[in-house]
Length: 490
Image (cartoon, rainbow, N blue to C red):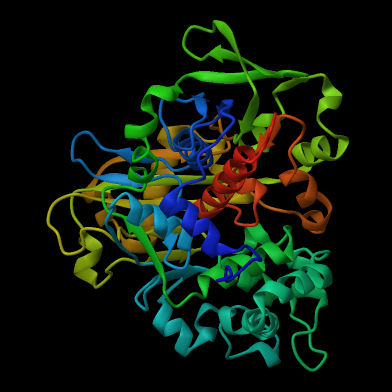
């Protein structure tokens, strides 16, 4: 069996199911699916094809969940305000992309020409890698001459190398040995060589330049997984035309089974099935439907507002997981410009790294070399950085993004500006957060309960997997729960 490079999943069987489907059922069930994100669409697609009756209830007026592409009416440009990059190594995601005949192009995550603007100083990634002192961080003598990435890898590369020797076995060892640490605690208290510890300034530098400040209070193992993926030599891609083309590819099969603008308010679990109560988000009228079982794919952040009757039909451990699972705030601000003026300066894709409020900005990877308007991700923030933007009006988000970009790129940004958009996943009532992320110690404590069915209530979504924040997690969970339900006799 081919194993997943990160986890103990038997990938061959999952890929076979994506390609061929599930076994035809001999006991068709009436299945309620809550949420038309990737996990809900995949579980419904597989189960419908296997002979079950499915109904999908979606609170929003679109499919995709946190795969959302905003399109500009005046120019036809688009921005993926949700999932924006797909690792080529994520075989389940790539399998569905191939299945639907979607075309991809490289997502340029970094370039040697990337601008770094930190501590009031402007340089490029190439220059910084040649002379790390250029940013004037007051690091200790033994840390001088090393980039933030080089310093971080002194601490984590031996662990990553250990994992790669035998991922199936060694990830469990790493979780056991390091799962109790937050990222900040690991960097502060774990010697990286010869009983030498990072200075506070170096930890600050690592957080700022590697976009890990939002991870410092989170589980160190989560950071390891993020770094593991970022090290993949195969790189990243994006779907040409917008990543929402992936969830929309399920519509020919499932459109008639999806009911939009229906927010789950209550679940009543009884001997003969489950009754789901919904509120229409346009008319505020209430309705209900009863099925043999329900698949809940909405985030735990929104599940907290769902009434369950009887309360004890969901275990204490599950309620604890629903209540305590942390969701990372995430906010994106897109700016539409008249031209790709940055390409005249040699910037072809890639990003800006800064300690200004915008933190990270990404140039478009698609349409490089083209003429006319272009859409730039002017700010991508996580954690506390995202919450700062969430407190501003839309107009001020655009204003301060332009101001920060002008500080870095010059006043030309004002001359080139056309319009802007913003998306806060924390302020989205159907997400209430960007993506799940364990705090220190939570993986061992919460994960067994997160994935477990509760009577006739099954759970899917990337938050139920160890692929937090990736499309791959939603797919893995959608297939898993479809297999479980298809084999169930009720």
